[in-house]
Image (cartoon, rainbow, N blue to C red; front, side, top):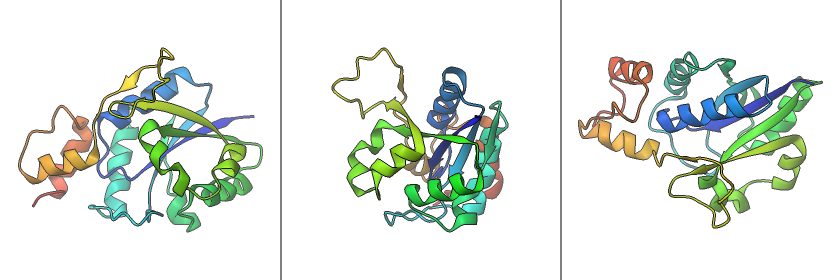
Length: 184
């Protein structure tokens, strides 16, 4: 059966950490496609700085540089903000498809807040990635550690007029500048 890896996030904005993580998953995991899934409404109450449509556009710019990658509006279409509910919806709508869920080690602290994480593991194979600044003590697995880049830091730099050219893919940055996003 085909397997689709779901890489969700606020993508507010997408940055090189997202790009490198997606490229790694595409290169090393036995998946057929990778879907970038921007958060429509964050289940833990976090507010996005940029509107959903703009974050989708930025993800589409990111996806253009990655093979077998597309942007999914599954959260918007389903009305499901909780991961388990979204996976149930996707599973019902895509019979004969297996799903994998890309999770960064930065999310470990939030897992207790996730609705029915055990069911999530039944619905999707978990692909764990080590993120710089969030390494697990047992992380001597030989897996790479992805750069410690955060959208929060990127937004702050953009807001102060700082240089983010080393943190944001060129096409994404061009779209941010064209829209005037994240200015003070």
